[in-house]
Length: 184
Image (cartoon, rainbow, N blue to C red; front, side):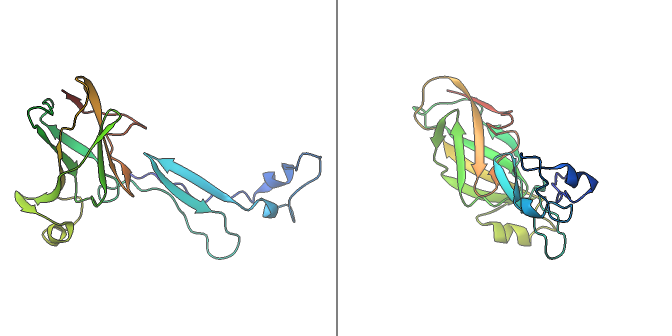
């Protein structure tokens, strides 16, 4: 699936209906020339910025939903444990995503990520470049985060995963929904 915001073409027959509040037309030649600006779109905590440019070729801008650009949490193991027992969680993301700056939150508490590695057909790679050399596309394989449970109150909380600059993982976002829960 792909979500995209195309450049809005406001230069149409309705443009002459706009006024600046005093009844006068604020447009030049019946167009919105005076209304240059930008369109800011946010999806899953990631912001795309589309600028309205009157000169040059019309180029679409937007957000694309692809495994290589949009992390997707596929599994969490185990689903319960404790800080006192030294439980370490394994979070598996779909595809070989850029995990240079991962953040994992248990409710509102962030726990440090101890390790990141990549898996392709059962083989483990310590870096994304080596894993990418073993596949045809970034959608193959998985990205694995290792997170020790940090000190937090005993409870069942949603698990959120954010990979900067990509944003929150699908199925693990406070902006949309968290499909994975952890109990301590």
